[in-house]
Length: 213
Image (cartoon, rainbow, N blue to C red; front, top):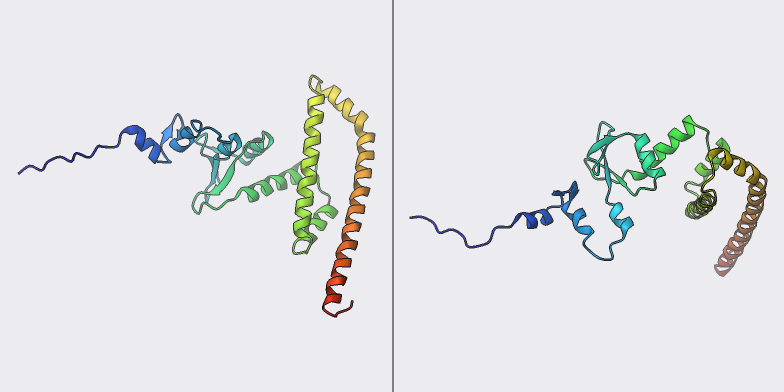
């Protein structure tokens, strides 16, 4: 006796492609291909889906280009402001910070270093310090401010040759040094005020517990 065939419809190719995150559509997964169809999707969020996998043999695999890349090529992605995440191919652990630190180490070792030994030593001393979280946020905001300034200066220098740009920067050097000096003095003042305020608050707290310093 022959069994009757099921009347339930079979999933077509399009539904399979949408259901499987690993399915490729024009070189992209079904989830990635569908992102462009939804309104209000943040472009940066879509770009952030670029994943670089790190394998036990220390090789880096770019899932967007389906090819192995070098640390120098990852650096180029950073220079191009590309959004990406580096993950361990086996555990899926986020390794982005460690890769960025590795790039900084190579830059500091090979080229003209940005950080002096004194600066590095002071940064190390902040680890485990009560001011560690504040210093991280302080550095992040200041670096971002410098990046914004660099972008504005780059916009003003459009059309200049590298030689003219170098001459312009040399001419601006005294002004930049003066601005940096003023900025450093202002930062010192902010730190002094903050230290005095924290000391006053600690004394008030100790006094509330009947303790004296």
